[in-house]
Length: 68
Image (cartoon, rainbow, N blue to C red; front, side, top):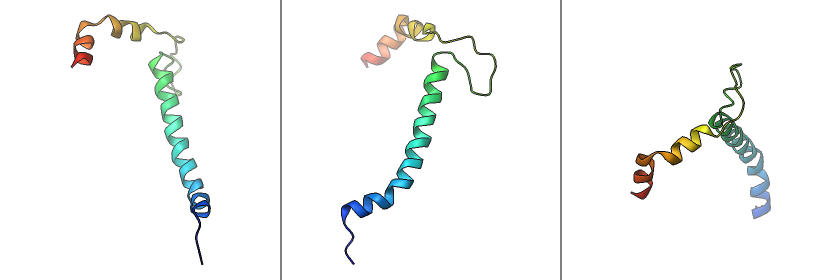
């Protein structure tokens, strides 16, 4: 029995979709929290803001670290 590349890819696809789904949902939650929308279970959301990113751009130590 010969196993072609397409057959191997088709057999791996369900596992890859699950892993990609968990990774994608994790990244989505990180981005939500980074703009201040809080956790899914938290009800203390104040709305999206880029205030924290602006503070990072103004910080001299961050500039030095990126220059390193």
